[in-house]
Length: 339
Image 1: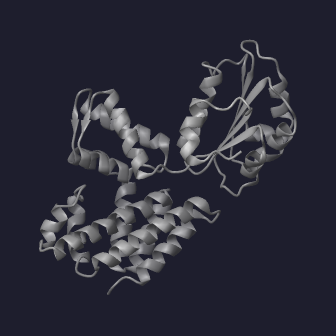
Image 2 (image 1 turned 180 degrees about the horizontal axis):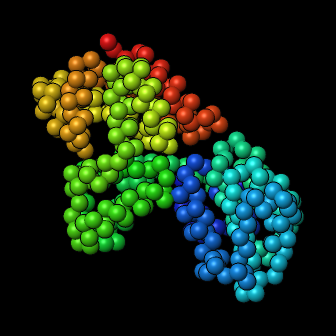
């Protein structure tokens, strides 16, 4: 059975007893691991208990397809059910999972992490079609998801984060839940319990190479500079920058262009319109924005935002190569940029 995105949190808090096997799949490895661990703790508080918890890998199952079924049949030393935890890429798990789901068992819980799958993968289809197994997609967090995550983590230490600071965090993070948590934890550690966090501190703390690469891509895209866009994308791919985050960074840039353009239509100067943006753009981008305001009409900039949102959905839902899809889509926008 496929668990709808809006139902995932409720499902993980109290899964139906009808399910004995669970698959976590998608492009966010950190979120896959986080959700799988959360579910596993419902069945066993000690995941290192070798007497009632069995851990398997894709490599192990490639050599022995009956290993999941054999592990599920083993009687646990403690508790009523054995917990079988499996981690792999995806394809090498298929035969073993298919064999396990073909049998009826009630004395075990199987939790599978597949870190290189799409919604069209045969392993995902296998779990979706089963009445006793659940398929849970784990894809890059939305802006609102990251903002909520940061707010909750800061609240635990009574840290007061400004709205602009949260906006920047939400815009820059989100490609991987584990990485997002670590970056937010660093920010919390930086200001300490009961501290305050503003936008400049976040700019400084999160100003990494990946963000700089995304800024270069957005600048080249808005400039209609095809050669520079290709160079910036090659650099980003070399540094393993997440495709979704590149597209989101471009979305944010064009949204700022559109909002500033509308502010200018109401009578503000370019500099005043840029300063009024929330969250405020980094000072290094302000000159770029001012230059691009001269060529981009606000309604066209907002139309590009919509196009970039469609590209993000395409990356998440299709089996196409993320880098190829992103590069071709951004190149198409760049070629049509106003001159």
